[in-house]
Structures are given as C-alpha cells and as structure tokens.
Length: 248
Image 1 (cartoon, helix red, strand yellow):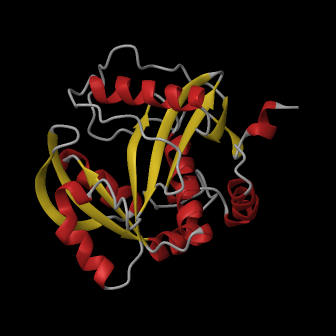
Image 2: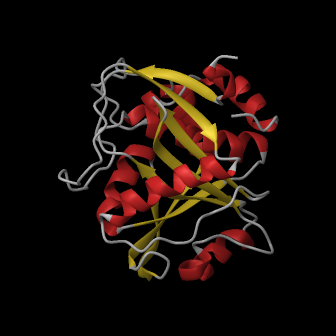
C-alpha cells in the first residue's frame, strides 16, 4: 500500500512558499528543513506514536520562544489532532477543540464570559490550538491544516465559529491571512505563561473565501491572504470522506 493511502490528503509544494510564522525570530536553532520540491502528507494523530511526534514539535517550537507547554492533548470525540509529515519528519501540527458542555474550550480558562456571549446567540464554537509549523516549511502546510480543520468543524459537525487565543504580536498575521477579528482584549494566558488576545472567525466567511480563492496558488492576483493556498473546493468531498471514516 502506498504511503499516500494512509493520508487524509497528500500534495507537493516547492521551496518558494515559506515563512508562515509571521513575527517570529529567524534565528531559532535546529528548526530548518531544507525544502526543494517536497511531498507532504496530512494525517490524524490517532495513535500514541503520532501524538508523541506532534507533541515533540510543539515542545520544540513553543520551547525556544520561552512559552510553557501545556499537557499533551489526546484524540477524543471533541478534539482532533492533525499533523503534516514529509520525508518521515513531522513538520506541522494543530489540534481542533470542539465546544462541549462537559469540557468547554481551552479559551474558557481566560475568556469564558466572551465565549458565553456567542453561546447565548446559538453559535457553535471550536478552537484551533497547539498550532506549530517548523521553520522553512511551505505555507501550504499551514493552509492545509487549517482547511482540513474547517472541513471537520463546518462540513461534518456544523460548527459556526473559530475562536483562537494568540500572542499579541501574531494578531495582525491572523487578521491579514485568514480574516480573524478582535473579540477579546489582551489577557495573561495561564496555560502558556504569556499574553493572549482572543480572536474570532465566522466559518461561513471562510467558506466564501475558499470558494473564491482556493486552489489558485500563485495565480491569486493581488490577494494576500492564505486562501489561495487552500485546496480547491472539489477536493473537499474526498477529504470529508476520509475524515468521516477516521483515516489518515
């Protein structure tokens, strides 16, 4: 069986699409992956070994910034962890948390009153968290992880909004590249020991941007967001099927 058969989706990306970590230092040690034309595989961290590989990348990327590392997140009914792999190396990961009565979201620890405002309006919330992309890795990896999390949340489970806690220096990155908006002031994030700002993104807005720009790649004209590096909409049914079947 080919390696691709175990992936949610696989794709090739050239070296010219780098630097997804806006605002980060460029001299972090031991984070470089020389990229030429590489094949990336997006998978679910649905085994102990895969979760450990994702956690190691989190520790590496968060550790050199001086952030505390919150405990490893398991693959459960209301959380899914994705990771990107190339050449046997884990180069990207994120966890998507779905709002649940018994658990809530990680952001509730610092912003519960703000999240409750949306819940009272009938909004269904989910939170991308533990996002880490290794230095020098194509922006297509970031776009792929976000797009697949959107498919899981919006297409499969009918969630309506992303909420995300980000360091203040990354706020403009998420606004410019994905369309997030301010939703909470700056507070101290107790999980990572650093300041955090709460942002919100309506997933219907993301759907419209994917339909408009997804798959354009370098033929995006003047569009400066990450949406041209999302998959084209015709790839979504296959990705959805593999997520529903729990493959990857």
